[in-house]
Image (tube, rainbow, N blue to C red; front, side, top):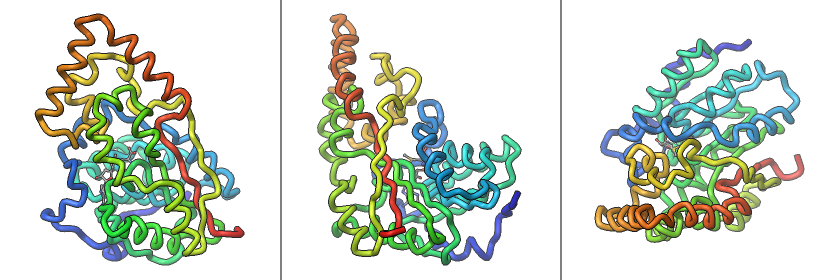
Length: 298
Ligand SMILES: C[S@@+](CC[C@H](N)C(=O)[O-])C[C@H]1O[C@@H](n2cnc3c(N)ncnc32)[C@H](O)[C@@H]1O
């Protein structure tokens, strides 16, 4: 197995970020990192592993960039499969959790880099794959998704021949109806939508740089929030809400109103029915989508 160690020279190719540069403005991940894993796991990682298997290369010879690795739930599974993983994130807290998690499992095939993806610079064709799980929407969407396009442009440059980029994101439709509380927090959903680049503009951009989305994959059985998802009381827990960053886009007053409505439904005994009805939509569209990106013609 090819083992990577933390290489300071390589790390210097990443642009270090200052504390003042709070890229992910709507949620502070150093705080969130503490509770993140209470509601989040590597949902959809089977999709990632499936596409990586199709690269037809022994796992120990593969290197994958996990862009916006968070607490490392996805990176852990790739490390477990024997791949070398470069875990990149802006948040020190998330990186610390990621490092602790992977090391505590005894895997030595990962490195950690603090970096701002919107300033990411390719180091040449070094990755068999780049995966970005639920992180792209944290980049500033200004100027027609300039930061997202910059990151993806550099990510394509960092791919080895035949390499693949796997973007785990949420469509606007999934934002509205992929979680049962979507309607209750519709103000946050509307504020959130402009952060998520949709399929058509993303595809159009990728084609200008010689790449394209070849597959869109949804696993309708996967539920991001896992345990407690169907519990009407879940929303009253800060820990649970921290598993869905949309809540951070509500004002205190708006959040109080949402909690007031769900508490009223619980009192009236209508909460379970409400959840079951709303969940029918999730069962049709799923909660998240993987975009599989490859070089045109490869
Ligand atoms: C919702 S979490 C996803 C974490 C992980 N990929 C997962 O799915 O469990 C988003 C992550 O993106 C990171 N992030 C946000 N903005 C970033 C940026 N500009 N550069 C690098 N990482 C960023 C956050 O620190 C956080 O760890």
